[in-house]
Length: 155
Image (cartoon, rainbow, N blue to C red; front, top):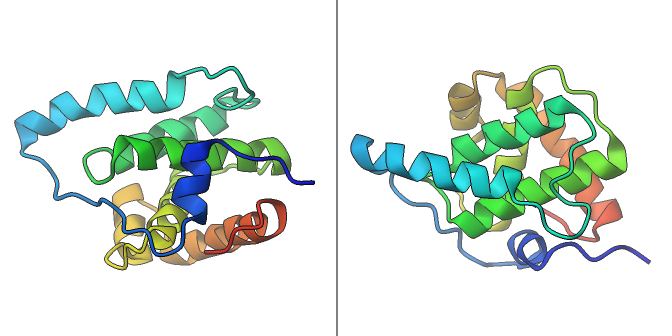
């Protein structure tokens, strides 16, 4: 039987048709204030279960980059869900990470697609995370396969 992930992850990843709360980027002064709290909360918050415990420093770096890239564009719940998805993926598959931005972009893309945010494109994510869109596609495929097989969730 498959493990049940956090309620936030299940809601963000498994709820079909749920609209993403993608927001316009805040003004520069407000953006600086928004950056610190969600990043610390999503990456360093330590629930009682195994989530947020990183077996490799690069996995934590991906979580930080993912959180920073999503801050100001998504709700805190969606950011936590993305980090939870990344954590579960690393725990179950131990992926090799060469460029942290590739996995950060792929996880963000999967969360955005699951939440119905069609305006999020691989090309835009590739530019934001300084990686190639084709590499994002490869990692999105890995994550999708993982969600389909291990989480019984499809993107």
